[in-house]
Length: 509
Image (cartoon, rainbow, N blue to C red; front, side, top):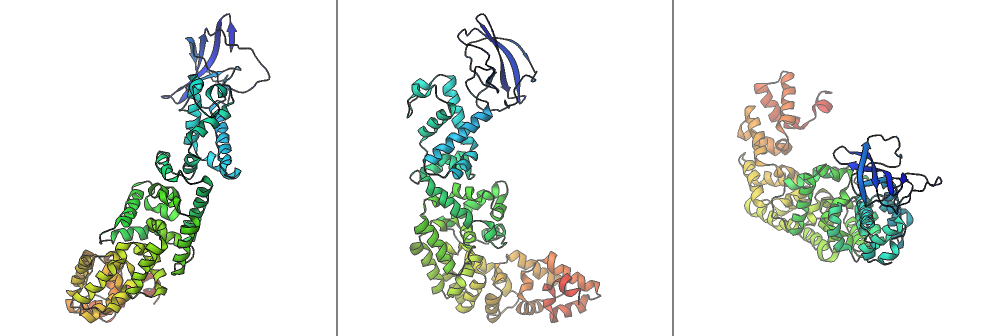
């Protein structure tokens, strides 16, 4: 920077959005009050404001004279002056100062230094808003009209960090905005969510987040594929969903539509942020009165320690449940239907939607339907529900479709009762999938009576996949020279052959 008479010549940078680069300009201004006295002891690239520009004398793309500390950025201030008479640091320095100011504010709210630094470093959008706000007030000379705790005129000549601190205090978000952003919540959702959390101390929110991180850690789920289980529950649901179950369905459908889909349930990446965006009130639950007692109660029902988080993750509204008013009545309904207390935990682990009222209330509909329409004793139905609680997600009308297909093979009530008790997964088959197995058997030359005997002896066959399981076993027999009538006799006498593993069981023999 150099001065000549009343003219001031300075080198400036302007960020060009199209090129994505800084371009150096030489600008002459008649701002006579500006002083450009060289001070050797000052170093580093500085940013200086000039409002009375004369004209652009020339420009070039020579970056050799630029300081390395000046880096391109596409938001905030557009003009940067290289000179020793400075007002602001580089963008990187501004962000660093702003992070320090936010960390200081968080510590004033009772947050530990370690947590405060961590939160401020993971909230770039919030930090950028503060930096831009200070720059706008600086550039437009509006500090005198700005009303803050220290007054506009008093802070106008203060340090950049203190200005950031004053702007942050006037937001009165009590640190919730940067905190939510730091855990991955979409910045566009923070304002909506903060309305629910305005009365919660930030230190309490941090404790709850730490609790949820431990509860939903994939390391506790014993390698279970949660995304597969959720997809299966969604596909097999045919009862009318109540409000809580509908919220869960909406939550999973939105998740499936985003990047990563439901697989984030298995990895745990960002799952807590998505959960809070859909169910912000979970952060209002008391640690001692709600969250910890709920976890202890579910463990007392038989859910393995560490897997409670998986149950709650598959049915998030349960986090908001009251133990006495919501969870215990559902458990009592299951026990009243004949479910043993020791089996409740295992059932919840297989089918977390048992915590939904509409699912539990369906137990009477299922038992009455089997007893009245199919003459299946209640004890067999209860045993089937215990083995396969997903049955409670089916309406009687949906079950009727596959049961009619089973009856078409000449199956008697006694056989159906045995299938219901010991092979209930067959009842979850779609009717079209069941028909595919029947058609495959017919193509092999088996008649209806023989297929009924095979179903009675080995129901698992009719729950198998035709292409990947049954056809492969038949092709193995054909390779051994067994086909036509001999193949029919083998399948009639040893139907279990069709559910054996070819590589591990049949070939070694």
